[in-house]
Image (tube, rainbow, N blue to C red):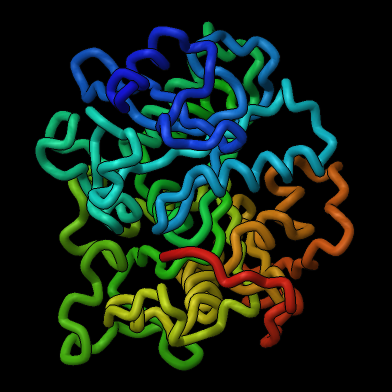
Length: 382
């Protein structure tokens, strides 16, 4: 059976988790899901999921979406999330795990036929799929997340659903961060009674709302002579992706403050020469390492907010963990952010320091640390 026949068989049976025919039987299999709506983009897309997405899921109360990094390894993220779910003791019938897998140009032999394809890193910033790749022109990776959320909020298919958490690490953290800022469906979804949250872990860069960047103990407009394009998107507000629309930076920031966003940063993600750290001058304007960029951005949010408090935004440093999604999401704070505050983290889970910023600056120990834990695999993937 060739890959196309295999995909069609999956569509016909739909009772199975369907993926590449070359996968071993004991590995996760992605499902081909049809997304979009009448009068808009319609396309097939690969999702790893813990339940059959073609069927009504009347018991599902929560959905956790975990977004892969630059290796586009949704299977690894799905496997990790399923292990965390098992460790949590939560009822697996009530929690649906979904791991989107953005097909990239190098993935021609993975069975993603007749699906949109993105450049290797373009999906992580909200770029459109490459031309002629199985979708209408202009399909942004951010629109894909819109369509997944809108699919989940269909009460006929998920009548008991109350909460959606969108989590991403590294390159996935970049996508989820920009999605949390730019999407136009958040208010609509929460107004319907859904609890929608974003968890952003160890991204290589952040989206700034003004031309200022961290300098010393404050923020100043960055030197154009050093980096003429430092304020271009994906780092700033210039030359935004079409998905973003016409809102200006301050309007986006004020809207962003009302969304439920949590940032995680590993204190040992501190290598300025990490092999997949974004070293472009736009990223370097934010700081030399991921942990320094995280701290700078957290202070920047408080700086922009002025006297406003930030009750909807939380920040945690995960102590002695580097660039590793399993240890970040499996940490004490990561476990409870994904599965609820009543869940006991696994023995040996990394500790977390909550960083309380707002009017008046630091309110808690920032939990700095420089040593990578001995079991900290350097994994993926900005």
